Image (cartoon, rainbow, N blue to C red; front, side, top):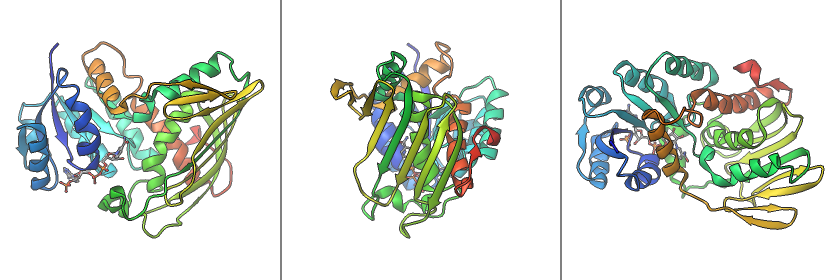
Length: 325
Ligand code: NAP
Protein backbone atom coordinates (compact mmCIF):
# COMPACT_ATOMS: atom_id res chain seq x y z
CA UNK A 1 0.00 0.00 0.00
CA UNK A 2 1.48 3.33 -1.03
CA UNK A 3 1.89 5.80 1.82
CA UNK A 4 0.47 9.31 1.57
CA UNK A 5 3.07 11.96 2.40
CA UNK A 6 1.37 14.31 4.84
CA UNK A 7 2.24 17.82 5.97
CA UNK A 8 0.86 18.94 9.36
CA UNK A 9 -0.09 22.61 9.36
CA UNK A 10 -0.76 24.09 12.82
CA UNK A 11 0.81 22.29 15.76
CA UNK A 12 -1.72 23.11 18.50
CA UNK A 13 -4.03 21.07 20.70
CA UNK A 14 -5.86 19.16 17.97
CA UNK A 15 -2.66 18.27 16.11
CA UNK A 16 -0.86 17.12 19.27
CA UNK A 17 -3.62 15.37 21.19
CA UNK A 18 -6.06 14.13 18.53
CA UNK A 19 -4.40 13.82 15.12
CA UNK A 20 -0.90 12.65 16.03
CA UNK A 21 -2.07 9.70 18.18
CA UNK A 22 -4.40 8.63 15.36
CA UNK A 23 -1.72 9.01 12.69
CA UNK A 24 0.75 6.99 14.76
CA UNK A 25 -1.68 4.08 14.53
CA UNK A 26 -1.86 4.58 10.76
CA UNK A 27 1.85 4.61 9.90
CA UNK A 28 1.13 2.05 7.15
CA UNK A 29 -1.06 4.66 5.38
CA UNK A 30 0.54 8.02 6.17
CA UNK A 31 4.04 9.33 6.57
CA UNK A 32 4.32 12.75 8.19
CA UNK A 33 7.01 14.31 6.03
CA UNK A 34 6.65 18.00 6.88
CA UNK A 35 5.31 20.31 9.57
CA UNK A 36 4.79 24.02 10.04
CA UNK A 37 3.15 26.26 12.61
CA UNK A 38 2.99 29.96 13.41
CA UNK A 39 5.63 29.59 16.14
CA UNK A 40 8.72 27.76 14.91
CA UNK A 41 9.46 26.22 18.36
CA UNK A 42 5.97 24.67 18.41
CA UNK A 43 6.59 23.09 15.01
CA UNK A 44 9.99 21.83 16.20
CA UNK A 45 8.52 20.35 19.40
CA UNK A 46 5.82 18.66 17.34
CA UNK A 47 8.40 17.35 14.84
CA UNK A 48 10.26 15.74 17.73
CA UNK A 49 7.08 13.95 18.78
CA UNK A 50 6.68 12.64 15.21
CA UNK A 51 10.19 11.45 14.42
CA UNK A 52 12.03 13.82 12.18
CA UNK A 53 9.91 15.41 9.49
CA UNK A 54 11.16 18.62 7.85
CA UNK A 55 10.14 21.75 9.73
CA UNK A 56 9.14 24.68 7.52
CA UNK A 57 9.08 28.31 8.56
CA UNK A 58 5.94 28.93 6.58
CA UNK A 59 3.08 27.19 4.81
CA UNK A 60 4.01 28.28 1.30
CA UNK A 61 7.49 26.74 1.56
CA UNK A 62 5.96 23.50 2.85
CA UNK A 63 3.56 23.38 -0.10
CA UNK A 64 6.31 24.15 -2.61
CA UNK A 65 8.72 21.59 -1.14
CA UNK A 66 7.43 18.67 -3.19
CA UNK A 67 7.45 16.66 0.05
CA UNK A 68 3.69 16.41 0.56
CA UNK A 69 0.77 14.78 -1.26
CA UNK A 70 -1.70 16.14 1.31
CA UNK A 71 -1.88 18.64 4.14
CA UNK A 72 -3.67 18.29 7.48
CA UNK A 73 -4.94 21.73 8.55
CA UNK A 74 -5.52 22.19 12.30
CA UNK A 75 -5.67 25.95 12.45
CA UNK A 76 -7.72 28.85 13.79
CA UNK A 77 -10.96 28.58 11.80
CA UNK A 78 -10.50 31.90 9.98
CA UNK A 79 -7.47 30.43 8.19
CA UNK A 80 -9.29 27.45 6.69
CA UNK A 81 -10.41 29.15 3.46
CA UNK A 82 -7.09 30.78 2.46
CA UNK A 83 -5.06 27.71 3.46
CA UNK A 84 -7.34 25.32 1.54
CA UNK A 85 -7.16 27.58 -1.50
CA UNK A 86 -3.35 27.64 -1.49
CA UNK A 87 -3.12 23.84 -1.20
CA UNK A 88 -5.47 23.30 -4.14
CA UNK A 89 -3.55 25.83 -6.26
CA UNK A 90 -0.48 23.61 -5.79
CA UNK A 91 -2.31 20.35 -6.45
CA UNK A 92 -2.21 19.12 -2.84
CA UNK A 93 -5.09 17.23 -1.16
CA UNK A 94 -6.52 18.69 2.06
CA UNK A 95 -7.94 17.29 5.25
CA UNK A 96 -9.10 20.24 7.36
CA UNK A 97 -10.61 20.34 10.84
CA UNK A 98 -14.22 21.45 11.29
CA UNK A 99 -15.94 23.93 11.27
CA UNK A 100 -15.58 24.41 7.52
CA UNK A 101 -15.21 28.18 7.94
CA UNK A 102 -16.12 31.21 10.03
CA UNK A 103 -19.63 31.50 8.55
CA UNK A 104 -21.86 30.06 5.85
CA UNK A 105 -20.96 32.69 3.21
CA UNK A 106 -17.25 31.88 3.55
CA UNK A 107 -18.05 28.16 3.71
CA UNK A 108 -19.77 28.39 0.33
CA UNK A 109 -16.45 29.55 -1.14
CA UNK A 110 -14.76 26.43 0.28
CA UNK A 111 -17.48 24.26 -1.29
CA UNK A 112 -16.94 26.01 -4.65
CA UNK A 113 -13.14 25.66 -4.47
CA UNK A 114 -13.51 21.95 -3.72
CA UNK A 115 -16.01 21.50 -6.54
CA UNK A 116 -13.64 23.11 -9.05
CA UNK A 117 -10.60 21.05 -8.08
CA UNK A 118 -9.55 17.51 -8.93
CA UNK A 119 -7.94 17.29 -5.48
CA UNK A 120 -9.88 16.29 -2.37
CA UNK A 121 -11.05 18.71 0.29
CA UNK A 122 -12.07 16.60 3.27
CA UNK A 123 -13.60 18.44 6.24
CA UNK A 124 -12.79 16.31 9.27
CA UNK A 125 -15.96 15.97 11.35
CA UNK A 126 -15.19 13.36 13.98
CA UNK A 127 -18.86 12.91 15.00
CA UNK A 128 -19.57 11.46 11.54
CA UNK A 129 -17.29 8.58 12.57
CA UNK A 130 -18.88 7.71 15.92
CA UNK A 131 -20.37 4.17 15.84
CA UNK A 132 -23.10 4.92 18.42
CA UNK A 133 -24.69 7.52 16.13
CA UNK A 134 -24.72 5.08 13.19
CA UNK A 135 -26.25 2.44 15.44
CA UNK A 136 -28.98 4.87 16.54
CA UNK A 137 -29.75 5.62 12.88
CA UNK A 138 -29.92 1.90 12.09
CA UNK A 139 -32.27 1.16 15.00
CA UNK A 140 -34.59 3.97 13.96
CA UNK A 141 -34.62 2.78 10.35
CA UNK A 142 -35.50 -0.71 11.62
CA UNK A 143 -38.54 0.82 13.33
CA UNK A 144 -37.34 0.01 16.85
CA UNK A 145 -38.97 3.15 18.29
CA UNK A 146 -41.84 3.16 15.77
CA UNK A 147 -42.17 6.47 13.97
CA UNK A 148 -39.66 8.90 15.54
CA UNK A 149 -41.47 11.94 16.92
CA UNK A 150 -39.11 13.85 19.21
CA UNK A 151 -35.38 14.32 19.81
CA UNK A 152 -33.87 15.99 22.84
CA UNK A 153 -30.16 16.71 23.34
CA UNK A 154 -28.87 18.59 26.36
CA UNK A 155 -25.12 19.09 26.60
CA UNK A 156 -23.33 20.69 29.56
CA UNK A 157 -19.69 21.09 28.60
CA UNK A 158 -18.76 23.05 31.75
CA UNK A 159 -15.44 24.54 30.59
CA UNK A 160 -13.41 26.40 33.20
CA UNK A 161 -9.90 27.87 33.57
CA UNK A 162 -8.37 24.40 33.55
CA UNK A 163 -9.56 23.71 30.00
CA UNK A 164 -6.80 24.40 27.48
CA UNK A 165 -9.21 25.23 24.64
CA UNK A 166 -10.42 28.26 26.60
CA UNK A 167 -6.98 29.88 26.40
CA UNK A 168 -6.38 29.67 22.65
CA UNK A 169 -6.18 33.19 21.22
CA UNK A 170 -8.55 32.61 18.31
CA UNK A 171 -11.26 31.24 20.67
CA UNK A 172 -10.88 34.20 23.05
CA UNK A 173 -11.51 36.63 20.18
CA UNK A 174 -13.60 34.56 17.80
CA UNK A 175 -14.14 35.48 14.18
CA UNK A 176 -16.22 32.33 13.71
CA UNK A 177 -19.98 32.72 14.11
CA UNK A 178 -21.18 32.27 17.70
CA UNK A 179 -17.68 31.41 18.98
CA UNK A 180 -17.91 28.14 20.93
CA UNK A 181 -21.43 27.60 19.56
CA UNK A 182 -20.07 26.85 16.08
CA UNK A 183 -16.66 25.50 17.12
CA UNK A 184 -18.29 22.75 19.21
CA UNK A 185 -21.82 22.88 17.84
CA UNK A 186 -21.10 21.63 14.33
CA UNK A 187 -20.23 18.27 15.93
CA UNK A 188 -23.67 18.03 17.52
CA UNK A 189 -25.46 19.07 14.34
CA UNK A 190 -23.49 16.49 12.34
CA UNK A 191 -24.70 13.75 14.71
CA UNK A 192 -28.33 14.94 14.70
CA UNK A 193 -28.40 15.13 10.88
CA UNK A 194 -26.69 11.75 10.55
CA UNK A 195 -29.41 10.12 12.68
CA UNK A 196 -32.56 12.00 11.65
CA UNK A 197 -31.82 13.83 8.40
CA UNK A 198 -32.05 17.46 7.34
CA UNK A 199 -33.41 20.21 9.55
CA UNK A 200 -36.07 22.47 8.05
CA UNK A 201 -36.20 25.38 10.50
CA UNK A 202 -34.86 26.46 13.88
CA UNK A 203 -35.89 28.93 16.55
CA UNK A 204 -33.25 29.64 19.17
CA UNK A 205 -31.95 31.87 21.93
CA UNK A 206 -28.19 32.29 22.30
CA UNK A 207 -26.38 33.95 25.20
CA UNK A 208 -22.94 34.97 26.35
CA UNK A 209 -22.99 33.77 29.96
CA UNK A 210 -19.32 33.32 30.79
CA UNK A 211 -16.74 36.14 30.61
CA UNK A 212 -14.08 33.41 30.52
CA UNK A 213 -15.23 32.03 27.17
CA UNK A 214 -14.89 34.17 24.05
CA UNK A 215 -18.11 34.77 22.09
CA UNK A 216 -21.41 33.05 22.79
CA UNK A 217 -21.51 30.02 25.06
CA UNK A 218 -25.18 29.10 25.55
CA UNK A 219 -27.74 28.03 22.96
CA UNK A 220 -31.23 26.64 23.41
CA UNK A 221 -33.33 25.72 20.39
CA UNK A 222 -36.48 24.13 19.14
CA UNK A 223 -36.52 22.94 15.53
CA UNK A 224 -38.11 20.57 13.07
CA UNK A 225 -36.47 18.00 10.85
CA UNK A 226 -37.76 17.68 7.27
CA UNK A 227 -39.32 14.33 8.29
CA UNK A 228 -41.44 16.13 10.90
CA UNK A 229 -39.45 15.06 13.99
CA UNK A 230 -39.37 17.90 16.53
CA UNK A 231 -36.03 18.63 18.18
CA UNK A 232 -34.76 20.40 21.26
CA UNK A 233 -31.02 21.07 21.39
CA UNK A 234 -29.54 22.93 24.33
CA UNK A 235 -25.82 23.37 24.90
CA UNK A 236 -23.84 25.31 27.46
CA UNK A 237 -20.06 25.50 27.29
CA UNK A 238 -19.79 27.05 30.76
CA UNK A 239 -22.49 25.37 32.89
CA UNK A 240 -21.96 21.87 34.22
CA UNK A 241 -24.59 19.14 34.26
CA UNK A 242 -25.56 15.70 33.03
CA UNK A 243 -25.86 15.27 29.29
CA UNK A 244 -28.93 13.64 27.84
CA UNK A 245 -29.52 12.53 24.24
CA UNK A 246 -32.84 10.80 23.62
CA UNK A 247 -35.22 10.04 20.78
CA UNK A 248 -38.85 9.16 21.37
CA UNK A 249 -41.13 7.46 18.86
CA UNK A 250 -44.64 6.10 18.58
CA UNK A 251 -43.54 2.67 19.88
CA UNK A 252 -40.65 3.39 22.20
CA UNK A 253 -37.62 5.50 23.01
CA UNK A 254 -33.86 5.35 22.97
CA UNK A 255 -31.11 7.08 24.87
CA UNK A 256 -27.77 7.48 23.12
CA UNK A 257 -24.35 7.27 24.83
CA UNK A 258 -20.82 6.99 23.42
CA UNK A 259 -20.59 3.26 24.07
CA UNK A 260 -24.20 2.09 24.23
CA UNK A 261 -27.80 2.73 23.25
CA UNK A 262 -30.51 2.16 25.80
CA UNK A 263 -33.50 1.04 23.74
CA UNK A 264 -36.79 0.70 25.58
CA UNK A 265 -34.86 0.15 28.82
CA UNK A 266 -32.53 -2.48 27.33
CA UNK A 267 -28.80 -1.78 26.86
CA UNK A 268 -27.19 -2.39 23.47
CA UNK A 269 -23.42 -2.14 23.69
CA UNK A 270 -21.62 -0.24 20.92
CA UNK A 271 -17.87 -0.53 20.51
CA UNK A 272 -16.46 3.02 20.70
CA UNK A 273 -13.58 3.53 18.27
CA UNK A 274 -11.04 6.33 17.79
CA UNK A 275 -13.05 8.59 15.50
CA UNK A 276 -9.92 10.52 14.46
CA UNK A 277 -8.27 7.31 13.30
CA UNK A 278 -11.43 6.40 11.38
CA UNK A 279 -11.50 9.85 9.81
CA UNK A 280 -7.90 9.56 8.53
CA UNK A 281 -8.58 6.02 7.24
CA UNK A 282 -11.59 7.38 5.39
CA UNK A 283 -9.54 10.30 3.99
CA UNK A 284 -6.94 7.81 2.73
CA UNK A 285 -9.60 5.79 0.94
CA UNK A 286 -11.05 8.93 -0.63
CA UNK A 287 -7.77 10.29 -1.99
CA UNK A 288 -6.70 6.90 -3.30
CA UNK A 289 -9.99 6.68 -5.22
CA UNK A 290 -11.45 3.74 -3.25
CA UNK A 291 -14.59 5.60 -2.23
CA UNK A 292 -16.36 8.90 -2.66
CA UNK A 293 -16.04 11.74 -0.21
CA UNK A 294 -19.39 11.37 1.52
CA UNK A 295 -18.26 11.76 5.16
CA UNK A 296 -15.79 14.60 4.57
CA UNK A 297 -17.88 16.39 1.94
CA UNK A 298 -17.55 20.18 2.41
CA UNK A 299 -21.27 20.56 1.63
CA UNK A 300 -22.14 18.37 4.62
CA UNK A 301 -19.92 20.49 6.85
CA UNK A 302 -21.58 23.62 5.44
CA UNK A 303 -25.02 22.26 6.38
CA UNK A 304 -23.82 21.61 9.94
CA UNK A 305 -22.62 25.20 10.18
CA UNK A 306 -25.85 26.55 8.64
CA UNK A 307 -27.89 25.12 11.53
CA UNK A 308 -25.74 26.97 14.09
CA UNK A 309 -25.72 30.21 12.11
CA UNK A 310 -29.52 30.00 11.80
CA UNK A 311 -29.71 29.64 15.61
CA UNK A 312 -27.46 32.66 16.13
CA UNK A 313 -29.55 34.76 13.73
CA UNK A 314 -32.89 33.55 15.09
CA UNK A 315 -33.36 35.61 18.29
CA UNK A 316 -36.38 33.44 18.99
CA UNK A 317 -37.95 33.64 15.55
CA UNK A 318 -38.17 30.80 13.04
CA UNK A 319 -35.31 30.64 10.52
CA UNK A 320 -35.28 28.27 7.54
CA UNK A 321 -31.90 26.50 7.49
CA UNK A 322 -31.87 26.00 3.73
CA UNK A 323 -32.40 29.75 3.19
CA UNK A 324 -28.78 30.23 4.34
CA UNK A 325 -27.35 27.67 1.92
P1 NAP B 1 -4.88 25.70 18.71
O1 NAP B 1 -4.40 24.86 19.83
O2 NAP B 1 -4.92 27.17 18.86
O3 NAP B 1 -3.97 25.33 17.45
C1 NAP B 1 -3.96 26.11 16.28
C2 NAP B 1 -2.55 26.12 15.75
O4 NAP B 1 -2.50 26.85 14.55
C3 NAP B 1 -1.54 26.75 16.71
O5 NAP B 1 -0.57 25.78 17.01
C4 NAP B 1 -0.98 27.91 15.94
O6 NAP B 1 0.40 28.12 15.98
C5 NAP B 1 -1.27 27.52 14.51
N1 NAP B 1 -1.33 28.70 13.64
C6 NAP B 1 -1.94 29.88 13.86
N2 NAP B 1 -1.75 30.70 12.82
C7 NAP B 1 -0.97 30.02 11.93
C8 NAP B 1 -0.42 30.34 10.67
N3 NAP B 1 -0.62 31.53 10.08
N4 NAP B 1 0.35 29.40 10.04
C9 NAP B 1 0.56 28.18 10.61
N5 NAP B 1 0.07 27.85 11.82
C10 NAP B 1 -0.69 28.75 12.47
O7 NAP B 1 -6.32 25.25 18.25
P2 NAP B 1 -6.89 23.76 18.24
O8 NAP B 1 -7.69 23.55 19.46
O9 NAP B 1 -5.82 22.80 17.91
O10 NAP B 1 -7.94 23.85 17.04
C11 NAP B 1 -7.50 23.79 15.69
C12 NAP B 1 -8.63 23.27 14.81
O11 NAP B 1 -9.00 21.97 15.25
C13 NAP B 1 -9.92 24.10 14.87
O12 NAP B 1 -10.54 24.05 13.62
C14 NAP B 1 -10.78 23.35 15.87
O13 NAP B 1 -12.16 23.56 15.68
C15 NAP B 1 -10.39 21.92 15.56
N6 NAP B 1 -10.58 21.01 16.68
C16 NAP B 1 -11.32 19.89 16.47
C17 NAP B 1 -11.56 19.00 17.50
C18 NAP B 1 -12.35 17.74 17.24
O14 NAP B 1 -12.77 17.10 18.18
N7 NAP B 1 -12.55 17.35 16.01
C19 NAP B 1 -11.04 19.26 18.76
C20 NAP B 1 -10.24 20.39 18.93
C21 NAP B 1 -10.03 21.27 17.89
P3 NAP B 1 1.47 28.23 17.18
O15 NAP B 1 1.00 27.36 18.32
O16 NAP B 1 2.67 27.64 16.54
O17 NAP B 1 1.60 29.65 17.54
